[in-house]
Image (cartoon, rainbow, N blue to C red; front, side, top):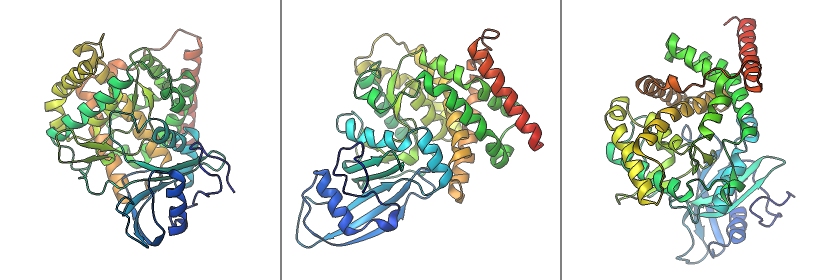
Length: 402
């Protein structure tokens, strides 16, 4: 029997170890415990694996449900998300609290946030085992766009406006509940671990994707490694908002209306520099030429949407500067993903490689290198940590002969 999870649900409902442990009986219990629907007894349940190469962190299953009697309010399908069976992925998820964050987002914020996400029917997270179980609304009736193909200009505008409304709602409030109860991505305690995880992930990144980097881009990517904590400290000096953190096409569903968008996979959500989501999306979910042609207009539209949401004290040029500065967030996430997540399937490798290409192009176009922090005061704590990190990385490279 597991202990009570963050959702506060009946602890007698076990969290499945994998998709093969999801049964009609378990789903019946979960829907009853969640209290969102009044489902009659289930007659049968059929499941299919989904999300291979789409969501790197976790196992996802679509369950088709049939009931013993008619019930118009009961869902015909649900989407069940579990923790990852991949050992290295589980280790990374535990380090940066990915599963707890997502469960808390759905429990504490999703029902009131001004951006649509799937309805949570049931959710539980068990800290000791790092197991997660979410039973969610199936958004299969909405449209998906392949991230490899990239978004259109219209879809990009819809995504930018949606996240701007989310940011306006939480603008400079991330120190208050419920945001602070979920995660503060820029908290000082997280800066050194992010730097260390990034540096530890560089070797595998270059082993698998090294051919994507020119000599200059490789040098810049390494330099970010021993200045990542200072980079996060610089971001923390600007405005804060609650963001998605992995805001990209594979996590979006588009409906028929001009503002109809639903966003999934809130594992990396938290208080952050708001333009991080915009840079993350435009820098990775658009073909390079389209990004170049629309990014200034998109950032201007983001600013206009903030103003419509009541945000004051930030000008269009501030948003543009923060957009350029935040493009390095994409490289942080890509390197950590390549180093710690399961990239054993072909689509994951292709998606990460394409993401690296698009990000490197954006960093160069935006002359983002100027936002890498200068070396800090000699012998100060920041200087010592940066210098030690760089020395350890170079020593490891020398020992491995690369």
